[in-house]
Image (cartoon, rainbow, N blue to C red; front, side):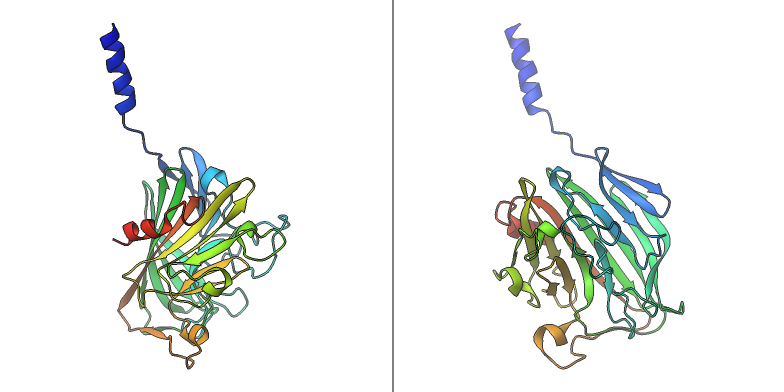
Length: 308
């Protein structure tokens, strides 16, 4: 009897922990991403005058909202209603053949969803066209977004291939880009409810991370009673790695490999990147939504593991 109880106890102790499951559900104009039946994020690609595909909302450790509500929802306490183009989490750029896809306006470009290549397991793969205000194609992309449950943490990987399908395409030298997120206001470095701190892979801290080159940037702070953060990783295979960071104290964090003129005060056009007709350029990034501060979360080691 005792032996049977011991065997049962050992079986319980040694039993593998079941991994949390990511599931995807298509709905009108969006794909809902859940982890063990709880909302993680939504991929929004059509409707509401959308100028580009985005992820909103994003719920991190403990279900905490990691990005701001505006412009999707107005009036959230502590939020600023500025920069309506800072729509939660997105990839775009402020000068593509002279057209801004970063901003929202009458003469700006739109990134138009074309089709899904895959919506399965933990991965969404799509094709998109980058169109001028007149509907003229500038380029296209294939984007693969993969969602991960990492214990209490959450991660989103972007793998974006920009394809010069309509002739040469120039990603111009401007700070207004490119792989960006607008954080929960509590993770800002300044503001009425700001409790955030920031550091990059080179040890530069807070407001000074703006315009600096780094492998990664991490913002963290206290939301409610919990310390959480957002780490953003630039892949070693990306053009001009380590990238520059358009990372502001008001909650914008964006990896930008093009804005050399602004970041380093070099001649305008120094950061231009031309993709020749028929050629492609690939970009890869990770967003890690984590518990604790940068040290507790082991961001430096997490980056090394991911970068391999």
